[in-house]
Length: 308
Image 1 (cartoon, rainbow, N blue to C red):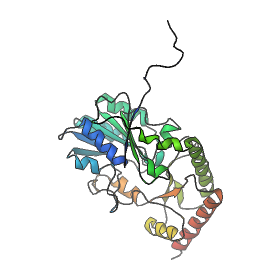
Image 2 (image 1 turned 30 degrees about the horizontal axis):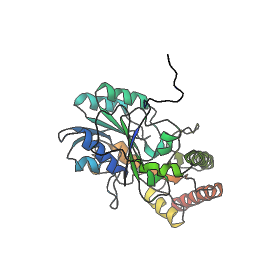
Image 3 (image 1 turned 180 degrees about the vertical axis):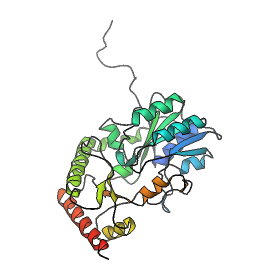
Image 4 (image 1 turned 90 degrees about the vertical axis):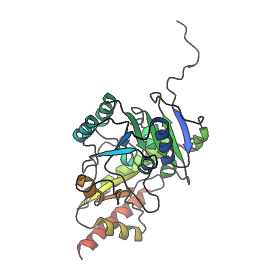
């Protein structure tokens, strides 16, 4: 047996295609592998805004595809029993799995197995999980394809990347485009480390505030978050959001409005969550001093609202 001096096989190659936006990459993925009567199965927690529309749902509508939604819990985790039922109910072409805010679902491997057992292609939406994939290796390897949103995770004005794993059996209508080397301009490892450190600091600071708690148990921070999601219990989240940003605290509510196709009567857990979740910044530009100011302002603002 001959041992080569350098690796020559391309067994671990991932095909990368660059776009202006992640949704454009998703649309290219759908164009390559779906036909008009195919059904796409998506999570029941998808947002919409008047400025941007819906990044993951708009391409499905534009392609004229059938769609179904599977339930999410109020912890923003997949309701696996409902997913299993939906997969058994009809032929699903593509399962979309969203890694919300860079977090990987605790049932990730079970979800992947269910989809594969039912012959689905799997698209991992990693718009928030660039570092969770590339640095942490916790996502993006089990599905057939992934999409990144560069401008949501790095100080770039635009950028989307479609990643095709070796399991993806279709070809795209254009050649591989390596303009995604924008990623190589940044020290992604150090950025991910800073985000993890900020998340740990923030969670410790938040532990003393009543009526605010992290969406997930993040005692062991192994993933790199886009923002840190917390649940607001005692005051109106929308008013709190407005007051915090009036004070320059840079909080966001990424899923404040769900797409109308998600039925309120069926997916009430999603709607309840969308009215209670607030996302706090943990990006690489935020200092520990700023995080302390953020939490102090959050506590003061909640007290102000509760006193009225």
